[in-house]
Length: 192
View 1 (tube, rainbow, N blue to C red):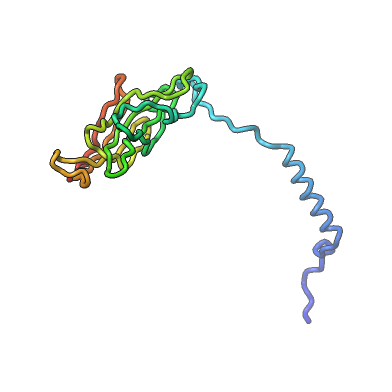
View 2: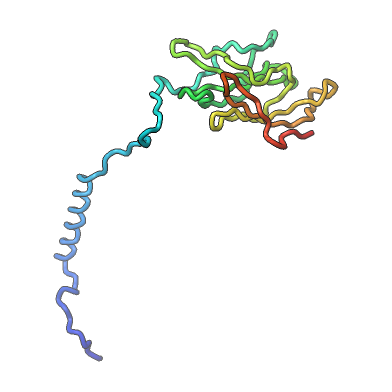
């Protein structure tokens, strides 16, 4: 057996006292770190940016109890889809509702309505009609993105096309501008 050229050092052998000292040091570090926590995070705007006061309520208007402008006869109006977001930049969300008559068969046309709710009112009210049910349109998707309403629509090229078989796919975008909703259609959105 060959001897090591380096003499053995006493501190390289672990003894129980070394483990106790290590455990005590780790415990001390953990205990001290709990005393020194960072302050709570805050989001602040840079100087000069315009700040609007936070609204009293930031919940989107509910669709229950709303009198939708639909003529449904003996059946009731049914909310099929909805999306919410701040459409007019006032800091309060509006709700966009896709509504049709709850017919027992067939595919009734959809209407798309914008709802808002005053702070002192128990129910929301319709403030705009984006799609009138008289247009014989079916809304396949609806969303609110960056203050704009985006929708995918199915429609008919003429009154002769049967209600079962829409032959036009369309996309639409509505943006609040000059106190009204302006509709635009993304490029290449029409198809037959």
